[in-house]
Length: 104
Image (spheres, rainbow, N blue to C red):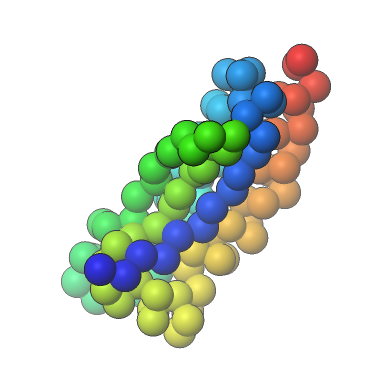
């Protein structure tokens, strides 16, 4: 099964703050929502398969937005829906992380 995902990692020390985790999660959901609007829709399978997941690995907290549908990556190369969604949200994501980190 092919996976195409957008990942952001952040140092575990900062992640002790719930505000940073919340900022990451909220922005990831916005990226998911935008990706679902940007993806080419024929039957809706790819669109409905785009999800957000979070994982804690040692010193990293990884938010993943993507799809496990086998044609997700080829569709991304034809018309970038995930990259477009990330690009649209990136400024707000960085701003929200910075603001959350200031609350230390």
